[in-house]
Image (tube, rainbow, N blue to C red):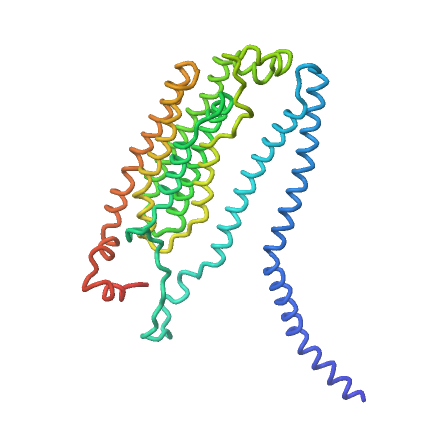
Length: 375
């Protein structure tokens, strides 16, 4: 009896580490597979917190406004404005979180770069498949930045602000929109330094483009304060109407009603997608990265064209002071300096990586033979 008990204890002691290891692996597996579920719960909690906070803030603003200006304040309209403003901010934050999570998932799914390099035991006839690069209809590598920026120009070309407060929103959105586009370029700078097998001089050249973009964004930050200063009386008619809206409308030209609620900035909303799309992009081969370097001038030109459209409408169509149109035009010229800096990236890349590019553009004895040098 004692022998059998001792033997059972010995077996349990020997198997205990295996039991612990199996349990630990099971817990780790369940924790890893539950990551998406935990993200969803965190998103629900953020949404509940934002809804309750926004409702409280909007109600407080509407009530205080009604108390301060009992005959000139529209509580429902104020509540809606605060709600829309907070909803827009929440959407921007969620898009940034989604882009970060997508980049994290893509990074965890990526196979190790050197998992088969210098492996003596690898069979000589081993064939490795490589993900095909994303290509457009013409057979060329897709230029992600240029295509996303083109959508900004296209969206802005179709947009006609219904009222001047919507135009004010465009002036407010120009600097932040340029910053979103600059974030995509900053992402390209970071990956050029830390991920792509590219020369440091290329990263410095792309960084110079980013700096020109941020200079344009800083210059654009001066537009909205200047616009609000020179049009202080016009804006006061909307933000603090005399004897309420019913009184202020008596000063409308021709007795026409206003254009309704102010629309959010189309430039800002579409430029946000440039950063979001670019953070989710994961190139597989360096020819795709080269296509991005080559597309930088075109992409920034699309952004400059959207800003130029705003400057032209400010000068020819909108009832604004000429100095406002001049300031918007100055931002467009600053963006063109970023285009000039971007035009230097691809020639530099081709110069410092001439041998690497030659292997792809002029493979020795054909692509199949050149592929024998693949690592």
